[in-house]
Length: 209
Image 1 (cartoon, one colour):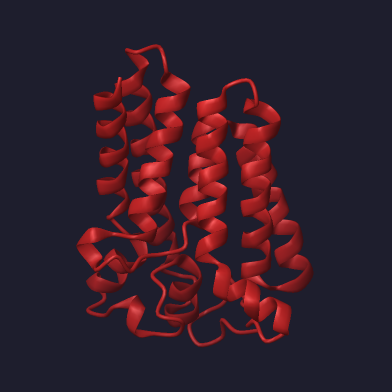
Image 2: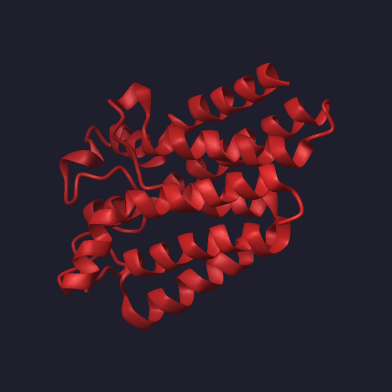
């Protein structure tokens, strides 16, 4: 049982190393990490280049995440643990996205990947965290606030709907905690009142609110 679990997590991790923001900025002969916050995530990409090319970032991160979850489900499905495989694939891809070995362990914060993990594991959790993010983002224009609260909702969703499957629930809580950990500096800035607001639909050069 441990061998399939290891393969599942490693497969997800390697897929997670394919970072959409880094890949698209590389095609533009640039590196998103050399701009703004230095983070290889969607928000910093939009702040640096505008929303236009961000669809390609979303597509890459969505496809790699869904593939990792599907692969995990197939690998552990033979053991009768498809739900656990999907969750472990998701955990692996989020770890690879946040700490990519091929990119010096400097990746994104995992929110976009987390959304597609949630949708792959349980559409109810995906819809819930997307709603949480949207409500608080459009109320405040703080991407980080929406992301932090969505991360809490992510973990809570697994507790609510998967409390009868302890390994899956633990994976969900771990992913939510990982996303919160990646936003620790944002949380500090939010508490101090000096976090930046961002228009995710802006053209290049007008991302700040």
